[in-house]
Length: 397
Image (cartoon, rainbow, N blue to C red; front, side):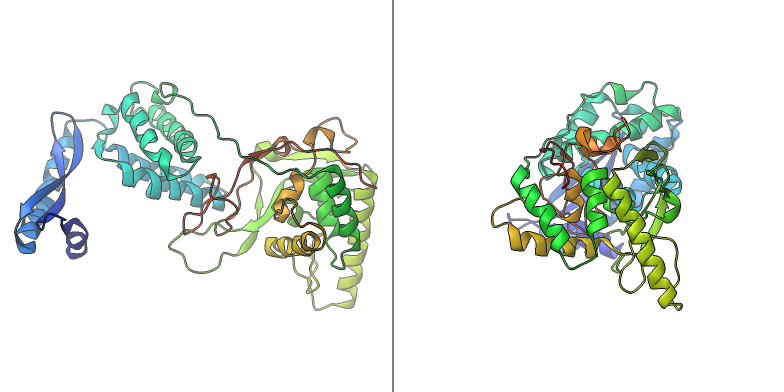
């Protein structure tokens, strides 16, 4: 109580003490947050705040008794996230993203908190509008998440109508791109082969197969059929999601992909050759290092462990520093977007991944790429882009 009083009792610019208090409006079936002012001393403001705080739970219980739904709007947001979404989610980074959107973008902008059955489309529209100034894509991110939550509330019988279909659809904002020219791509491929570090396979899988970094790092011998030159993608090796309150560095683990991201496709001859070569090198390494355990991963470091995203990002930088003075600088993740997905040199007529058409991968928590788009957030509110891809096709030579 003391901590809340310190947060909600304050001194105004008019040299008067004020306090924020929640008030139940029985007529509107909502909770309002009002500021009471005009107190000459802090003690008087704190007494009013404490009295209102003692009265509020009783009034809230009385308000809820008038409705079959046990939630206010904000309570349902928290309930949906903590009780419905988190237990069923397999994506650590998405959990962190949704947590940030709800607790750091939506809730701080709620000025009135009605009982869930009494919200309407206008209320949701105004709330989304109030979030738009957070960053360029906050409006779309909030709309997309609220659409999902509102549908869940209607499906559970808490809403008479499906408000999700009544709110105005928001379009995902586009980001400007600096795309590799044909000559830049040739220079990059040449430098990639001259690079002394053994990351050639990782680059090829990103450039010519459209794989995400986590999918590349999670690739094992069992996912590759050399007789048919086919890759089967159904898992990824990524950082576990980390909430802003968690100070420990996140750990890497292997996770299954969501069903719609499962895919199989044929790969070019030169990528197949690199996979076979890498497997032979790995097997040789583990024969000479019997103390190391071979888990069948293709992307093994010199220490016999699976590489990390940080390792891949570091290996990109020397190539750019030596070749480009003004060209576009990317993390390793961006390499999968240097070529048009409809022109990947794969033997299958099916594009390797639907997501190769749109850069929809969320960076893991703590990795910030841009302040323009809200695809993922770190503890400081940094965000990373989700970008539509269009780039010149270049044949591998």
